[in-house]
Image (cartoon, rainbow, N blue to C red):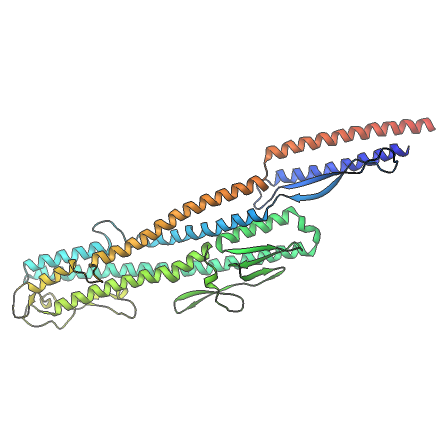
Length: 454
């Protein structure tokens, strides 16, 4: 009887172990599409078996539930997310301003400069024609407006980038706060450190965070995860979090840690890195170049006209263009209240002539900007934007491919394959059914023995 009851205990234990493994497999299947979920493995351990001992029953017992998650692979996916997020977001911002500087012939600032010089050339043919003079003024006004619009577009892009920076910082702080909450749950009860649900939630938050900012995540013995932004700035340690903030110092945005220390240079990847580079570095450079072109163009046109005499044979007292260099020449470029008769077409000592008008037309092919003509200087600006956009688009394509590869590796290691899990389910069910049949036979034998003893 002792051996019989021992066999029943052994079989019951095996059924419990198999049932636990069945539950793990079923949980894998229902979580196959859960974000951040890693496949769990319910291990089975053979118990010691000695047929000569009545107290050692053998059988099988449940081992620890193991996770298939690989920390190295997860970090690789996050790294690719950092880089892909940077390239994609910078490409988006550059695309916004690329439309401001079209390369199509006859369009944009370049097209308006060409039209201005064409009008000046026509005026030089009939220097005293009032209609030709009026057309020069009209074309100068249109050119000034094209500079104004380009400067406005860049200013709007700067404003949008600043707003996105603020929103992104809020999202980063929200995610780190969520991670703090999950850490707290995992630390409150040590058994939850192996909770597949909490583990999935934690890693889903970390992966979302990786799109916005580069970080290092270090798992701790108590089940929590410490997060360091840029690998240096503590954002989460255990159940404590340290939010970052955004400041605008002199027109340049800075990221500050919880103590007000500037950490901008530490965060070079993810969406936050792209926005910082676009807003703090690229846009100011483009704005400076645009204003340099506007100011240089206006100064050379004004100086050339001021060197001649107007229709009345006197030296000009008014410039054609005006601007505010402090605010920005491109943003404030405008024509003055000069009249057509005050435009100086003739050279001094040659009233009624067209020498000065010809000199003005020659500015189109003169190297006014370190050897570059106005059109060439503008083309250099537009090509710089286009080249950087192409670079980031190509980089984005590459990083997306690398990200996909990293995700595929992760899926192979820790993803749930329904077919594989279904096969495991069938095997475990057969084992459970077999154990049930053994238990039924043992129960029948037990009843028979009891009946015989009666």
